Image 1 (cartoon, rainbow, N blue to C red):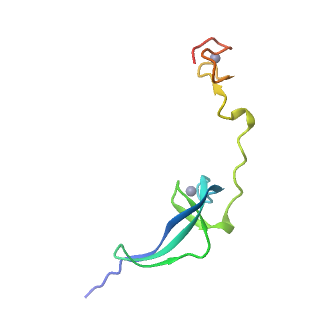
Image 2 (cartoon, protein in one colour; image 1 turned 135 degrees about the vertical axis):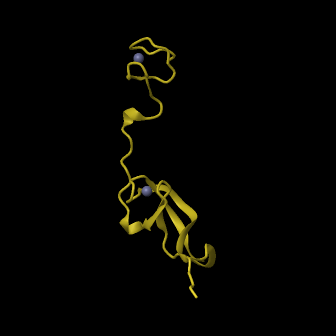
Image 3 (cartoon, rainbow, N blue to C red; image 1 turned 30 degrees about the horizontal axis):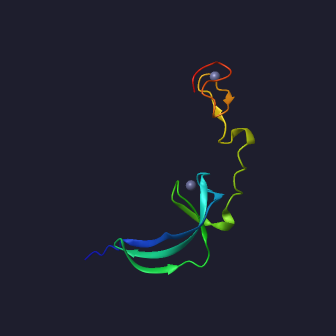
Length: 110
Ligand SMILES: [Zn+2]
Ligand SMILES: [Zn+2]
């Protein structure tokens, strides 16, 4: 008689402590500081759950959980010229004021 055990330890994010505190060591996306539970599953049913003592970093992009000690420094802030209150003309690709209706460089409507 064969017996197959289908299970394992899962790590489930229970609470996000802080968004975008670091970068994923796997894919480089923003990672959140989270509290998580260790869940032991048997036949895909959680049978045992334990709250992890230390918060960890979690990447939403690739679903990767890793310890805070392995984190990369957060990405540098975007350059001042690229802030959201500027707009780029889609015809000549120059920066224009967002309240402008027409591009001052090439005259195209924005
Ligand atoms: Zn990632
Ligand atoms: Zn233009």
